[in-house]
Length: 198
Length: 151
Image 1: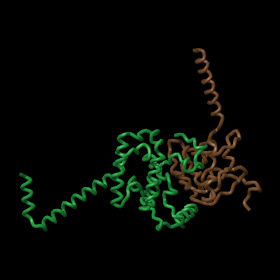
Image 2 (image 1 turned 90 degrees about the vertical axis):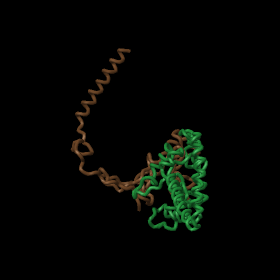
Image 3 (image 1 turned 180 degrees about the vertical axis):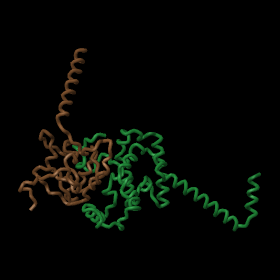
Image 4 (image 1 turned 180 degrees about the horizontal axis):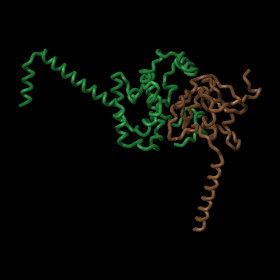
């Protein structure tokens, strides 16, 4: 009955009114969708479903991206969720795999996490390499860098790196979280012949 | 059993008494000065910033661990990764234009040469430290030997 009434209401209006109604509904829907999407981009929301509170999040709190002289903070999504819409949606859908593993408890202990850490870190490095460190460059754009304000080492390394076509993640690994056992990547950076405890 | 307890207690009391006389004899001066702990110092000492990034610092004596002429904030050293070695290792020092790690760091304490950095030399900032321009707490008139003086 109510359905019939609604049908009647719409059919009695001109197409112009229908367009306006659709427009308003669209705004409300899109606004709601966006608000919900933004809500999933908050730190509390990330921590509530991803396995991170006692490992990577804790480590991040010791780093310059959390606490620094000027008070600018990069939170989880600033580095781990793309800003462009399509890439953002893709990343959000991929994230559901992480929720599945949260439910399974795949990395819910320190031992389990450390055992998988190299693999998980490699996934992020690969993703960043593929996008030319897109998320880093939201704030750290090469073109905006003033080398003369950088330290002696940074000035040299940045110019040589960009010249060689390197991207941020090629050098800046483990800046916001601890690194995995790096023996496989450079044996010289680990004590002994790769005997680091798991 | 009981006898040992009594003996132990006597020993403890004895050493306590000894310690008490020793403290009374030596006049200690606190780094705070004569101000009682209950009172505030009035001002906090200035915060010192580490030297940001500079050229190697001259050594003052033979076998002195070289000082670190740059900031090391956030440079972690764990059994899985040593940030210092990502520039100062033999594989990287040329590319990074850094001082290379000394060969002495590859020896075990028994003098056996190892294939990688020895665990006893792995934690760099046990000996190598960054510098601030803080005023020295006490006057120091140390002069390097002639052979190490910068010309």
